[in-house]
Image (cartoon, rainbow, N blue to C red; front, side):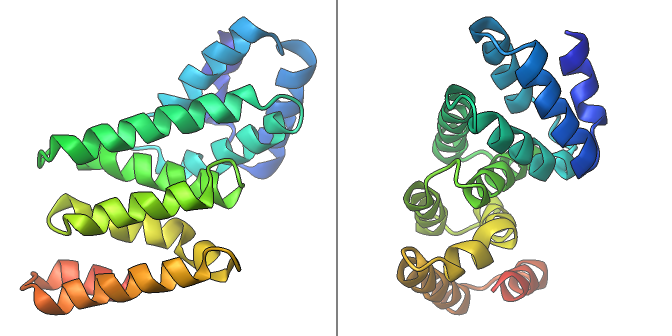
Length: 184
């Protein structure tokens, strides 16, 4: 409990690396890993600065045991699909957190690139309101990574072109148009 309470205080690489090693040496058992997955998933929606560090933490843990990364990825996928199906126009911070987290996990190869591209495709299928902001947040985090990987470059390029065609076909407010241009 003390370890999990101090995890949000790890705000740089050295601290997060030390915390991962500490967890692996002192707390690595199945019940603690389950608690860790819940703690990693339940990071506060306004603490977007922690997401790259927590993905790094998860990648270090993944070198020894892969169940933490798999469970966290599954939880993120379920939460993403929940937000897509719900189609409400509230809780934008939670939606942004989920897509940014998926992006960070994708960069550490903890979330499959193909599934990340499917998330992007789902966002583009209903490209309005919060989905525009979620798409831009996702592309800001891992768009360059997906574009530079050989196996995902063509699909990423096609999805980016689809996004630009949707932007041209729709009448968007200037904020959304600027967001799309910047992430492209």
